Image (cartoon, rainbow, N blue to C red; front, side, top):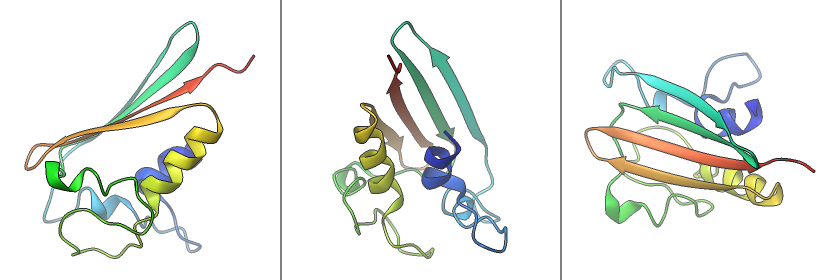
Length: 116
């Protein structure tokens, strides 16, 4: 699970520094990140919600495409985080969704089925 969460938000580089959280929140965007999980009979559902800048509706189609980035290009990145997470979840039989509102924040929800 840490791999999935890290790829979404808080990946750490080789020197132990966080390299992804600044894309969601930072000195210019103070806020809150909330992580929750619910277990059902056949799956686990995880939610990561932030009060960051949000993603515009017209950028949502880019979000999970490799090497595509949404919104302002004011932070470093290659556009691979969400695409990687979606591919990994797909291989595990899961899925990911994103709901966002500019100026309010974003919620990523992902589902992993129980292993049989």
